[in-house]
Length: 298
Image (cartoon, rainbow, N blue to C red; front, side, top):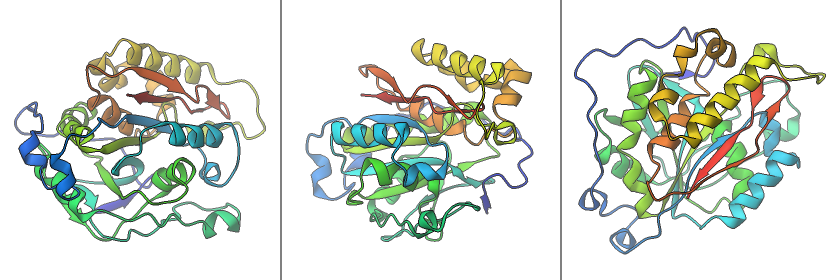
């Protein structure tokens, strides 16, 4: 059952059952993805985590959106994009958009009409949705024909790829899964990068809307501390520490009263390749309590 982000989130329940197992997608399982061209040699696509922040970044020219445009122009052109957004939460299942023409979802309120008029008419990819379903382990993915692109996806892609000519599918987050199982599940998707698919996690390293300083002012010390803790563990490639962020206690709770915006980060690090170089962009905390720190693995 699909659940709107930010509504009735009370924390994730531990998942009973067998311990997660590590799975690597094989080339044979990926044949047929996006047509016959998949079987050919393909440049490995980058994996990104993007701090998306305010929906207004979709239509404004500012330091964040300008960087998104620059990165979109610099990175190799993907055959398709798989996006994991903080704004599509499900409970007890994982879904992937499987329609040919996903709708643009305006999942926010109180913004100018210009933002509600904005559309991102990128095509979907039923083929990529089906292939992602086949390789996903140990959780099964359900094909979905109702969702579309929420603003965690389209606000970023509208700036990165304004022509909307790259097929995009969006994967939901099962909010009942504990973070460590999100990390393990996401590892099974890594092989998609070898077949021309860019994987993007979209959320925020720090995300506490209740504490936003609308009129400016210094960052909260806990926001800076958590952001720097994430930075250090990304540099150290300490995935277990990042998945166990709740062990930080009060700082973690302040940085993420609900951790929907943190989970997409785990998907980006899970599909990292040992040969990748990592670089940060849009570093810094906005409005005191929203970290825009973003990372590319390439």
